[in-house]
Image (tube, rainbow, N blue to C red; front, side, top):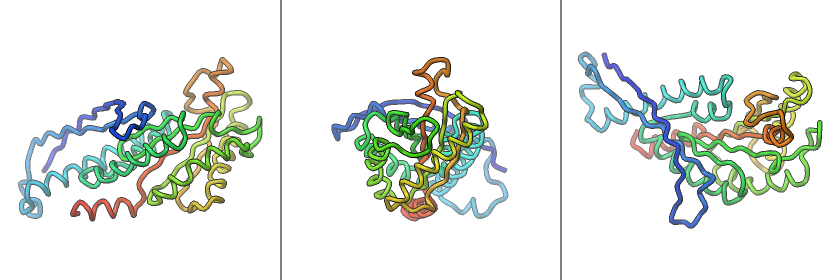
Length: 253
């Protein structure tokens, strides 16, 4: 029997690279796993016959998957849905590191393509927030404005380059109006963003959309400024099955 105790360390850091890219807006959230083995392999021949590297990678993968499931499930409920979706996709192990490196590059390119957005590297994915200044809708409308289309156009080349990713889109509103109305409006706006991206050549199967209405406010709804911040669209960008499979093959698993 193997008991694994997992301590979850959240490390928020901002770093710059030698690529002369302004990385201040990209927050790297590293998920550290501290594993304490309290009893070791007494009955499993398959485990006994593996070397230390294989054992370590296997434990890392199991821990990573467990961590992703736990954090994704909890943060996605009443907390931050997009963040929970990203953490729910954690693979762990060596393959997780390979995926993380690809996501680092994609996050930098998103930040370059659309400065001023909030790009967070979370675990093995990306949490992207587009505020009202980036993706604007007319009041009570679900049609993207011309400026919103222009901003989304800047992201399309990056999304096309990293085609082995899934993208979940979450629409939010402020608290003005009924909760039921805002829920429907936010869903339609999330769909409008997806439909526009698909119309530009992105694969529709990569996308899922969610309308969350007034949930998860990131600012107060008591001021015009706060309400403007809450009217937003968030993206959870994670590895699809092909990227995971390629990463596992590349790491020898």
